[in-house]
Amino acid sequence: MGPGPINADPRVSQVLASPLIGQFDPAMTAFMTQTMELYRTVFRTANDATLVVDGTSRAGIEAAIVSLIAPGDRVLVPVFGRFGGLLAEIASRAGAEVHTIDEEWGRAFDQQRVIDEIDRVHPRLVAIVHGDTATTIAQPLDQIGPACRERGVLLYTDTTASLGGNPFEMDDWCVDAASAGLQKCLAGPSGASPVSLSDRAVAVVRTRSRVEAGIRAPGDRVDGDVIRSNYLDLGQIIDYWGPRRLNHHTEATAMLYAARECARLLVLEGMDHAVARHARHGAAMAVGLQGLGLELFGDQTHRMHNVIGAVIPDDVDGEAVRGMLLSRFGIEIGTSFGPLAGRIWRVGVMGYNAREDTVLTTLAALGAVLARLGTRHRDPAAGVSAAQDWYDAHALAD
Ligand SMILES: *Cc1c(COP(=O)(O)O)cnc(C)c1O
Image (tube, rainbow, N blue to C red; front, side, top):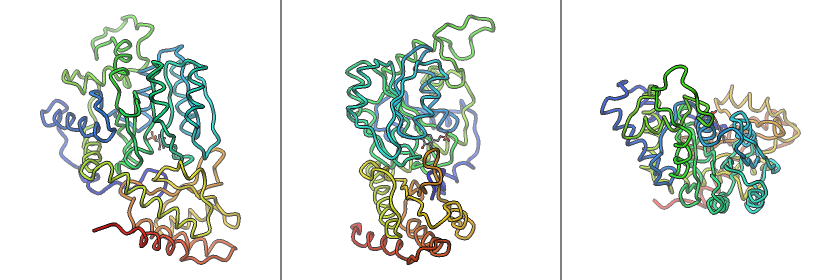
């Protein structure tokens, strides 16, 4: 019940053990095509270039950034948590001229502030996190996207933590590139990164990916503007996933099965339903944490549905609480990073773990641990009671 990775849905774990087949087996290429179609539904996009990059979420982030920007390109990164810092670092390693603006951790940017900064800096790309697990905050993008499009600026967003559990409208919000991972709301293992690129983004990648997979002879001059990674060259990866099936890497077969199953389960459930389920159980968890007398962290109007921050009270050692939850109850919750390390716990309600039983069990266990380790008198059942009351008041129709 931490900020991810989470327990995979058993149906996803099961497909990992499916028989391995060759990468050009018609069954395999059919799976790839189906996976592209499924992720179009998950990202809410009609983008042709919707595929899976092999590697953890960071591989998708790096593929998008390194494929879209050339050395010297100006990139604007609005930073409101740990992962914004990662986007800035990756862009700067790719040789970009990186401009950052910062928002206090626990708050989202006012979109107009970002748009004003775009008008000041004139970047080629805006790279921004959609949901930052470090702070639990989701950044609205519905005005930033259209503003980027009007100005001919590309917009990339990292949806690793948010996709599947929070509204995300790739096409309606005019997002040009988005990437994700399986180990959050998608209910899978880490190790595959779904990515989608708009036609505009593909056109930019095409101007930079002139090397057809594997056919450049050793010693050939590498064009100054060529994508500075072979493995993460989205031009080559698109050609591998597309109808030409040009060999690039060897597709990670078992992870493809998992990525396909994660999307299949979400699409089967319905994206709106999945988002509502995360909202429901996230709200119950938030109410339960408050029932335990804990203060929630961050601007709750912009909180992601699937991860809740609670300020660690001063009468307990936050790490001792986490330790006892794990060793005695088998429940993992997270702390945070940087300025929030040791200041907040992060409780995840995502993917397969976004359920009533997991919420109530976690609150019952946390109440027991707080009563045992804290010096302040607390009713150990106050959290689980508050959440049960909330569920009773918000009963779903059968
Ligand atoms: C969890 C998370 C990641 C994780 O990246 P990995 O490479 O899968 O470890 C990336 N971005 C965000 C916003 C996250 O919350």
